[in-house]
Image (cartoon, rainbow, N blue to C red; front, side, top):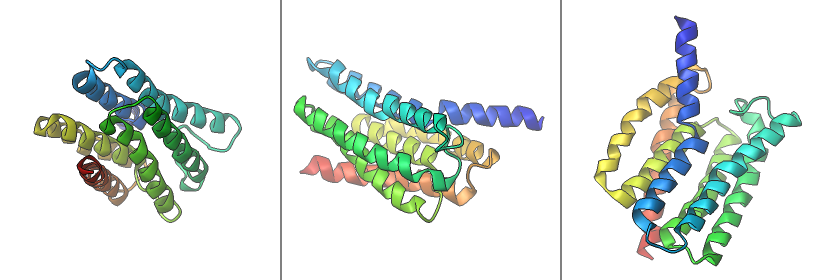
Length: 197
């Protein structure tokens, strides 16, 4: 039974991982919010490459050369380098979105991904906040801001994701709770400010 629960927890962690959740949220936002824009596929491609493909390639490469021990980067001490690189990756993506003339909402995604990665990086120097929870709830915040309160039902997944990360001994309760609360709160408040300018 314990092996079955661990397998289920691993499945949840992979399905509700940053490289799956974020692109799904971006696709939803682009298709339903900007589908009539002639460059909407280009916008999604940039978001997908910089939010999913680049991080996966980075972690794969670091695992290959032995700089990280696993694809989830379980050990806090190993997270600094990939997070630092991802700050630059997102900043580059933001500049590319501006060059494409992307709507402010879409370019803001990569801008605040870079800002929030700096925050996570600084926290990681002392503590291991849950990136899974941070990424998931910040993605929910984006969908909520774009599509309205119906998107809040997505938060019902949070307890299951928290359980999976704790069950896998990747985090404790406070690390998952902090990731979830801060992820949603930061992205929501940042975008409210960003869109009011």
